[in-house]
Amino acid sequence: AELDEATAALIAQRKALLGPAYRLMYERPLHFVRGEGVWLYDPDGNAYLDAYNNVTSVGHCHPKVVEAIRRQVGILATNTRYLHGAVLDYARRLLATMPSEIGHLMFTCTGSDANDLAVRIAQAHTGGKGIIVTETAYHGITQAVSEFSPSLGENVDLGVHVRTVPAPDSYRSENVAEEFTAAVRAAIGDLRRHGIKPALLICDGIFASDGVFDGPAGFLKRAVDAIREAGGLYIADEVQSGFARTGEAMWGFQRHGVVPDLVTMGKPMGNGFPVAGVAARPEVLADFGAKARYFNTFGGNAVAVAAASAVLDVIEEEGLLENARTIGRHIKEGFQALAGRHACLGDVRGAGLFLGVEIVSDRAGKTPDAAAATRIINGLRDENVLISGCAKAANVLKIRPPLVFTRENADELITKLDLVLQRLS
Ligand code: PMP
Image (tube, rainbow, N blue to C red; front, side):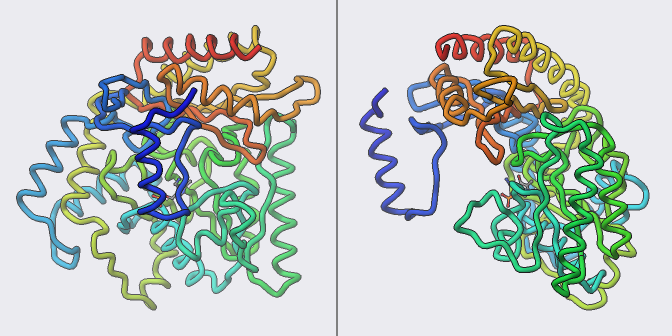
């Protein structure tokens, strides 16, 4: 279908004003003016079912979060070099959701900013520089972090101190734990051969950009042991998998039975208000603390903390961890039933409300079909349902609805995916 005139004009102005580096989603980009719960609305009042946005994870414009922000911004909003009780209350509360070994929380404004800080902390503690990441990982936009975010594409150079390992592809391997550990060990060896001391292994808790790999549970443990034996640290990037998303635990790393050295978080932390952070084992943070003075103007300001604290309230009060588990399971079962009728659904995986559906052109060969995935994503968009894609071969549907998704919302998602798949064949 053609773009309407108003949309085409906005796209042209955006390009003219914001420049060439941005990308919009969908063949026919969307323009939203309002959000509420699981719905986004365009200027004509058409509702779109949001099965993608994990920032607004307790629902768009949740009244409780909106009110907390509104109240606090009318009381105090300063830089963060003054005493304030709320930031301490929040830190205490957030740290209580983590294993007892993790005892400090530092605040940033974005996930990139959190990963940038985590790397500085890890390098200060280990005296090393080497970084190991998965092949199609995304960890953020700063200079340092883009150097270990291979999903940014071939035009962004990885650092000379960065090594990649293949994603833990549970669809194509029966031995994910062994192969992943061996790859991490090989990367450690290669860093050393080049005279680079390993500093860290960083993994997104659900390997979101790599294609959504959630299991088998516990497969990360031996790779974490390997990096520690080499004198490096394990950083759990929970920007995607944190805050109850995976339905089994508050944090993605918990399902792997590991206690990270550093945990980075962001996106859903403030339900749309910028707030992010790094949680750390005290012994790991000590070296950075001794060397650096850290000041992040907006990181953990009173308004950000009010938003973040309201998010934790809502997760608890509305039982969203459990909802992520039960609705996530319902969607997964629905998709698995669709896979019985549509051969292009090669694999359905994920945990809680973070699902990946691998689109293939033939099941026996498990051949990725990026073109079909793109058609499905755009087909759903035309049915007013929002999802996106990921993976090295760009053939995995990425589905991450707000945690307040109901069974009815889930059924609409499943029915519309079925409809789009029927048209495809
Ligand atoms: N880590 C992961 C796993 C992410 O998905 C993202 C954002 N997509 C980031 C870090 C960076 O977060 P931000 O965009 O807030 O800088």
